[in-house]
Length: 185
Image (cartoon, rainbow, N blue to C red; front, side, top):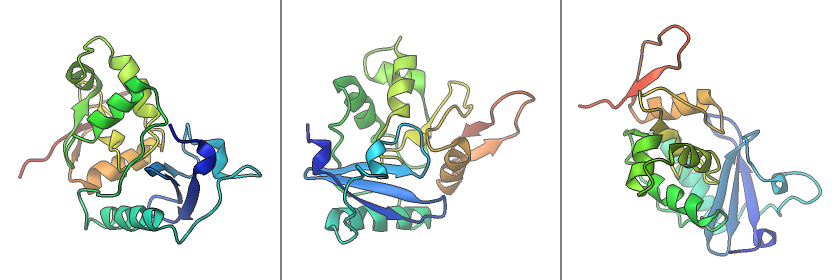
């Protein structure tokens, strides 16, 4: 695992608000919206990772994220460093990378895919701690009935990302989260 002290960062504006990117010597180690839950303390303050706006990997990640948010990119190629999590979290984050753009998967189905069918809550916790928002597509995970559940970057951003990918929102039932389904052409 890389030491967090080896990281550098870049802050930039997106259509969904400011984002912080962090790179380690191994790859992109973080992408967080400003104010996102579970973001590391090293993004701001006296102990913040150094800003490196000309770092090639951070520039690549920024450019790919901007292209994605403009609807011009569907698959990211920036190298990732997902070593900050536990082995279980890393397995969940790797599984997220296999959910194609514009498709949804439930927490229970993701748990079953990992060979842990009774671990939907643990999968949900790992999804919520995903350090590389958008690029590792935790926004594509929904409740078993298609309802939106928590998103560390905020449900409004999750909704915007799903709409960007062409996933449709269905009429909300009273007292329940919106339902989402994949759009088939």
